[in-house]
Length: 244
Ligand code: PEP
Image 1 (spheres, rainbow, N blue to C red):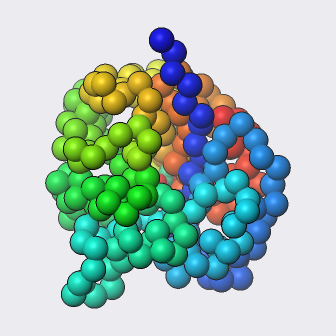
Image 2: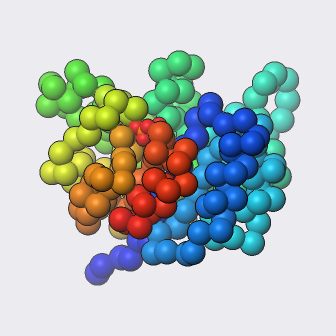
């Protein structure tokens, strides 16, 4: 049986965007005509509330870039999934490689964040990816499949979880795997998901641009993209969405 998975194009603005630029970007996306892909933007936390109000009534969804695993408490500087839902988010990214590297987030910690997202009614975007050394050693598929299974909480279902395959060496570098390499990893991740695999969206992320999006999003197991740098331009982000 073929399962239809509508593509999702998600923009991760990372630590970019003061109000003037971020809100103008959100306004441009909210005004764009609806296409064949679902659109999502993940601005910095400072812009979540105003972007939520700009996107309200538009088909563009709002997400956050990270959450704490706990609902509330003495965690200075952190935000709970419940707070993000309260601010208008429908999604939250868990385990982006920049957080895994800079904040020492393990698969187990990522899984706890994804479980927190589910507890708050958010969709968790769980990121996994191999390093250049792991790819060179021929271990990419095994590494990402093991990382995914270690990062998914028991609560993960197709309706509340999106997987993002993001090779660490492709993020922000302008380098990408070949289309065959992307297809092979996505097929391995789909297989590792077992019963949950048929309906769960698996995005590709890593230097997706308007000129490579059509090719990278073509394999049947690729259900959209997680876009960093190119999501800061409305024209580029919408061009990527148009290629999905
Ligand atoms: C990312 O950070 O998730 C990402 C994919 O970045 P870029 O598109 O800039 O490589």
